[in-house]
Image 1: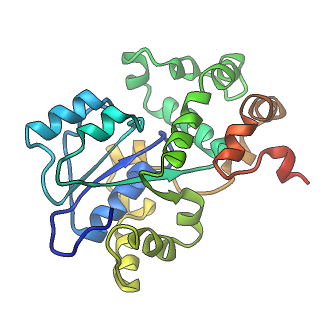
Image 2: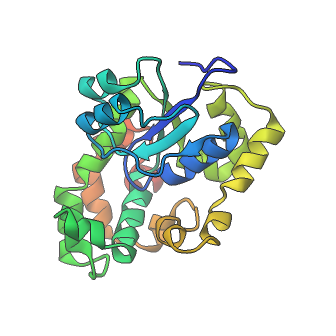
Length: 248
């Protein structure tokens, strides 16, 4: 759905955790001068429906949440529409980012009884971490793949945002409301990870220095074997390559 200039803008950034959701949200907020919702709904269709029915999804606003692309979710969207954006990221790097996030910010994993809580305080090669990767991380990858195949969301790749941010933001904007080069450049600079981290607090926890292939600094043959045997087809479905292919 393209936004008609002059109309109210509502955007939901929906996708897998640790794929750049916060970064993309703030780029788009800067790009279109949107308010970032302070109290977005939890990641369920029911919560979104209540959020919309209570008129809390304000015009010219944006938020991110890890929704699944279900019929109930799409039915809960505002009647006058909103735009959906989903960041994708190589699962190797997404896993490493999730591991480090759990170490820096363990409370929500503990409070929510999340399986990732078993990684907290453990070295990345610990058996508990490998167990989580093998038995639980597949759901994260499947969330990204579900959005990709749904065809209902504008896709942006973390790697493209790192390599050529202005060009990628312009490409993404063509599916929302096209913008010029200078406007895209200003938005990427305003929402750069370096600038956001300087704010401290929340930003120090949620924003790491962006980068591609950080997995090479952390993952072992044990991790890579699990990715290959358990998730190879999912990774290829996302348009990425597994280690065995990368090594060729």
